[in-house]
Amino acid sequence: MSALWTSQEAMAATNGMSSREWAASSVSIDTRTLEKGALFIALKGERDGHAFVADAFKKGAAAALVSQKPEGLPDNTALLTVQDTQKGLEAVGRAARARTHARIVAVTGSAGKTTTKEMLRLMLARAGTVAASAASYNNHWGVPLSLARMRRDTKFGVFEIGMNHEREIRALVKQVRPHVGLVTTVAPAHLEYFGTVEKIADAKAEIFEGLEPSGAALIPADNPHAGRLSNHARQLGVRNVLTFGTKVDADARLVSAQPDDDGQKVTADIQGSRAVFRLGAQGQHVAMNAVAALLAAGELGADIKDAAQALAEFSPLKGRGARFTVLAKSGGIDVIDESYNANPVSMAAALGLLAAAHTRGRRIAVLGDMLELGTDASALHASLAKDIDAARADQVYLCGPRMEALWQALPASRKGAYAKTSAELAPRLTGALHAGDIVLVKGSFGSRMSVIIDALKALSSNGGGAAAA
Image 1: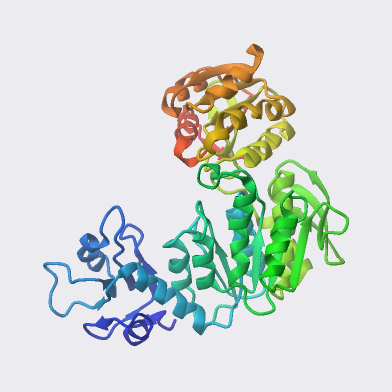
Image 2: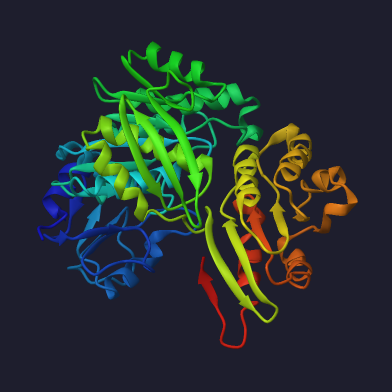
């Protein structure tokens, strides 16, 4: 395989100075996951990456991008020196974007970004090589790093873009320069920083500012802010504005979604082309992500029906709907892991999964604080009582100071336990579970609901284990 970056190419991209010639096969910012032959970029964040340059070379790095030479390195060490390593990373990312002829989609939204991105990765791989953001690399370093890893001969690029303040998407999408800009949904996430959902919609619409000429803007037709998003796109001169949703006039329409044991049969109409396919994950919100992804894939030139068939191979992601069964002493306990993040819309969708689940025992909701909701936080937490009722939850376990508002709103018959932290809640939950129960775990990342997931997995005993559901 040809080199991803040579010293000459990297110097040209960054205006930096290389101590000698080198060639790198990958790009890394973390020595824990660094591959042999990588270009290590010493970013300055909470920890200064320059302190790890020597370790990077011990692990086989081909070169390091630095702003100064770390002490103790030999004079012939392959170093590319720039004034600012963050700007250097961005420059390498922009150069990678400039040298490729790949068709590119950028995905943002208040929920479903990573799921939609992974669906697109799976679908587009049937039509050619795909470069895609790893994990949720959607911020100021994740986006340029994902771009910098894109090879010249890539046919498709799929990049996730996140934000919690205005103008963040604007800066990132101008690096990505997508042919398709997709907004999955707009919901009250990060209200603490924006104040209103309308301002969140405005910030999400920044993704259309970086579209390539004749690019397409994809908008959720069922969202109350669809018109606002569309207006932003048209004001920017975007002529190809397409919608997806359940509405009859949507360009991509979810016709039906029928759940089965571990997925669902989906029927969709994608710009007049009927697609019937199996999706290896449950939930109407997940089916809608699939419809949006299919619309995007079609705009990138992929065959819709072939792309749709790839979705049978999709499975829910860790922390985003992944399921497993704990084989505990009392018997099997099913778990829906939605622990990665939460806002009111995604919380309601997850509770919908609990409602649809088949169980011999009780439906149990274990919920942590939804963060960054600002002055409306208490009311938004309390409002989840209606979603819990719709989910037919038998017991509810809550943690976090904001969830106290929901605790007060619940009837006594549904109250399992409340604690200030997930660590305090975990033993109270695990000690109360019975064979046949199904447990939904969800909360914002900062609520540390992964602690609950780990405690559930630890229930496995006597040669049992956590088995995929």
